[in-house]
Structures are given as structure tokens and as C-alpha cells.
Length: 444
Figure 1 (cartoon, rainbow, N blue to C red):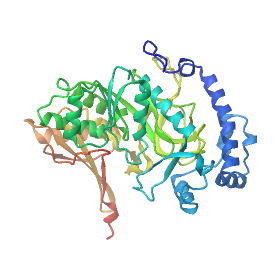
Figure 2 (cartoon, rainbow, N blue to C red; figure 1 turned 90 degrees about the vertical axis):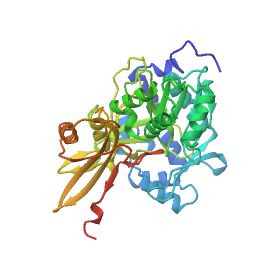
Figure 3 (cartoon, one colour; figure 1 turned 180 degrees about the horizontal axis):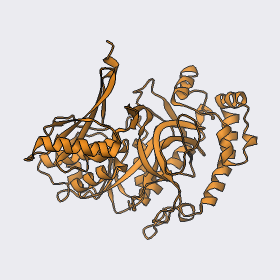
């Protein structure tokens, strides 16, 4: 690999090109990609024909809006109809060299296939992203994500491509992982926000101060919205004495598709690999830049299984304003939650992340929380469970009232607050479950 130690960019010409150049590149890639999908995939050929759209009719990126959406349910149903990979696949099986798979928590696990070229493109982007976050060949990097079919596992190869010493830690028990961090003086670590918090607290209980007894100075987090919530990021950074960088990815395309640079002002998107739309989930129309909408993605290079206008169910906001780092790619300015995690309380849309921003800026609270939704007298009632810190000697009634007022001011929702002793709520080893919805039992 050519030395880049003195260069702020992995691919400087690409990363700093104008917005007009980004759009021209995406249009060229999209034209080729739609033709590949149409000619290679029986599913896309049938669906495009049924909707009266043709790759030849694409003249601008706006023309993509005439093409039909794709959902997770579509991917799953086509995989079940044409096993094992489904008829969205646009290459012969002998060209597929790797698959990841979803957890299957909402149904049958879905496979995400890769050609050798797809895999190489993915890992090169991971290296580009790590580089933008400050990872360098002098780092010792531990990858504390699940390797069992999980699309986040191979991202470690991006760190190796950067030249960092890379430890494939996986889902080691916390005590063993802490021993690894100590033994090898690991300087960078990737895990989920919840587990970063849990691991730091576990270290403290074991008499290890993450700030002084460990060498970790960069934490890459993904899998939950917490890394893009300033209050959560600040609490983790204070716990570890390290910089936290949020990453975003999804199993259906490839590991991490966006990540923070060292400016930590939004997540730079892989715009030469994936086209972004942010749409009103009800109307399907674009929302103004900066406003919340559903993230809809179209692959631009992935040959094994193209995804055209894939509805992710994630609620995000974006900006195309230039970043102080000099990169010009679109940035996610918020990953607010999922549509299926959205609560509607007395007509107000509420995500767990909205509550998290309040809970984690209050120093008298541990930062752990859970939303409990019930129905009383035919009305929805929200209770936010939180914990006070060890050694709290203030008035619990005053603290409960203060938190309730802060939640109301920030979210517009009047919620009950249940103030619990520390260590009452369950700690997440990986992704945290923040909602307990009891409304399904109302009529039982």
C-alpha cells in the first residue's frame, strides 16, 4: 500500500470533489447498475416491466423516483420463493464468494451475497472510512463485533488494509476483552454504544480505570443511534477518555456505509457505492434537507444482489453542506431511530433516541433508561424508567420532577418518570432493547 501517513484522505480527488461531480459520478454508475439489475435479475426484469420503467429511460437521478420501492419483506419473500439467495441476485452462483446474513429477529434470516469485486469494494471503503476517523498504521485495533454471519465482522479487514495491527476479538466475554485491551495496549476499538458503556463500567468495577489503565483513544460504535446523540457520545468519551466515532451500516448492502471523520460533524456517506434518498414515509416524496425522513438506498456497484430503492425503515436527517475536514460527501446528521421503534404518544412521534438525549445529559442519572408503554382507560401512557447514580444524596422527588420537566420540554410528551436505584435496569451486551410495549395485552 502506498504510504498515506501524511495525507488526510484515503482517496483525495474522490473525497473532495464538488457536489456536481458527485452527482455526475452517481448518474453514470446508476445507469450501468440499472442495466445490470434488469439483465441479470429475473425479479427486477419482471418488476420494472410491470411498472413500465426501463433503465434506458433514466436521464437524471430524479428519474429514479419512477422506479418501484423494495422492502425487507420483498427480499425475504423472493429468497423463500427461489432459494437459497432469491431472484434479486444478478450473477451466477459461481460468482458469489461470500455471504452475510441478518439475525432473523423479524423473520427468516436473509442472506446478503457478494462477488469477489463486491467484497474488495466493501473493504476498500471500510479502509477509507477508518482513515477518515483517524486510524493509522501505528494503531492497535480490536474488532469487538460478532463474526458469526454478521456483516460487521469482515469490516476488520478495512483496518488491516489501513495497516493497523488488528485483533479479531469478536464477542469475547467482557473480562477477557478487557484483558486483551490491557495486554496488547489496544488503541482503537469497535463495538456498539451500549456495549462501550457496559464495558467501561465493567472495567471500573474490576478496578480498571479506562482513562488511565487502558490505551484506547478511539472508539468506533455502530448498531444503535447512540453514537450520533451528543449526550451519549459525551458520556462514553468521559468514561473512556477517548474519542467516539459513530458508524452506520446495514446487513442488506455492506458493513458500514457511513462514518464520522475526525470533525465528528455527521457521518460521511459512501456516495460512490450507494445513492441516498430521504423520503416522507407516508407520501414517498423527498423531505427538505435537514428534516427527518425514511432512508431509502440504491446500490451503485454491488453486482451480486443490486438493491434498487430499498426502504430501510431507518429515520435519518442529512446535509450536503461541506464538512470542515474538506470532504464533500453527503452526511447523515442524525440517525434518529427506526420507524418500527417509533411511538406515537398522544399524537406526538417519539423515538428512544429523543429520550436518550435528555437522560444522558443529567449527571444525577446513570444514563440507562427504558420506555414502558401501557394503555390506561383507552389512552396510551408512557413511563420512562431511569436510574439515579450511586451515592446520590439529593431529593428523589425533586429529581423525578426535574427529569419529567426536561422530557416534556425536549419531546413535547408528558411522561411519567420512574426513578430506580442504580444497576436496576438490564445492561446490554450488544444492542440494547429500549422499549417495553404492554399495549398488546390490553384485550387479553
